[in-house]
Length: 239
Image (cartoon, rainbow, N blue to C red; front, top):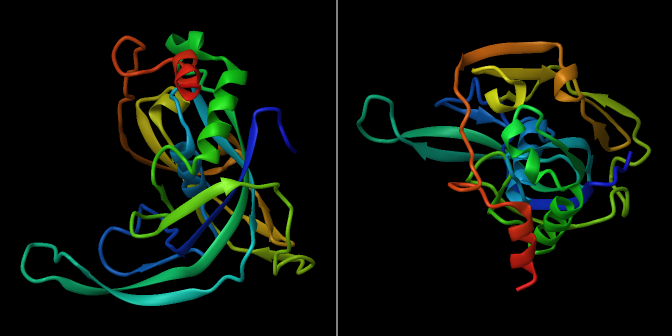
């Protein structure tokens, strides 16, 4: 459902590599067939983000056939010495439509004065029109992508009318300390289902499979030190 602070965008790239970060350290890597919630959240944050709010990915629509491509990648050998040759299986020629909205980070009460929904939404849409504030990557820095505004559901997907397709247990995302109010990092997992090319994601708090990763503290932000308030952000856009 479209919310008043939603953004809708198209993201595309020559390659993508969506993996479980808990198991992808070293060795060979093989992409999931669909983007993870965390990867899409990272793209939304690259468009525009402040610690004042949290991006929530509502749904994604697959706009091109799922295809894979295998490449031999030279990676540093553990323990030194010459590089190893590892086989990476990427997604090839990808394009997605994404709908997302933001919600206030209630675990950041010190930033309550920065909760101006209309102005954050204006800045987010302006940054989207400019292709994002930071570089866009699809799962890894090796897979650079591009974004632009779109109308979610427009155009034709090769999976329109194709019915239901389940993908089993997949990595969903991370629970970071500043988003859950604990000095711990957790990984979440989900069982997504694509229906006619669309995947509606579980909300993070609804994921029942979680794994403790490590203890982790949250970063501190202050308007006087390392945070620009949204009023200043919006004013600079008009310059």
